Length: 216
Figure (cartoon, one colour):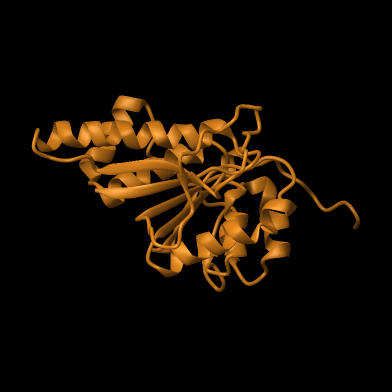
């Protein structure tokens, strides 16, 4: 069984936090069905956050957190959701950034969707490596983190212990990918059919709005 920490962040997109929670729960149900009644759940997802914080999603819904940061627990997978609005306070949140960095150094697979890649990059663990984020945030990301090889056209980049995914609904692509990697391709194929998730989205390019240099 793989433990999954879903990081609750101020102004995160609610669906990008609760969606994976539902997905991993369904994945475990399907895993047990495919493997037999004796099989345990594949994933154990839980929402985590720093202690004594009131966290509200972008849509105004309060996020209920029952598991808090500690120095002893290391998760198999740590997931950073989509973030809307001003990221500067989040990037300056040393408690969260240090916790992410510690999880990564101790062996957790760090994952992010959309602007969540900024938090992973802030840990320093992506330095000299490849990553992606939402295409509309790519210029800002490249300017802030020039030592990261940004693949802005990619929907998902797997660097082994760090996985970054593109824009908002890429949490479905990431969840499906994690199911194949930590479960099996057969399980991912079954969930793709069951949940109507397209497994073939590899590029963000079709969604991009073209922009042109006009000061020539």
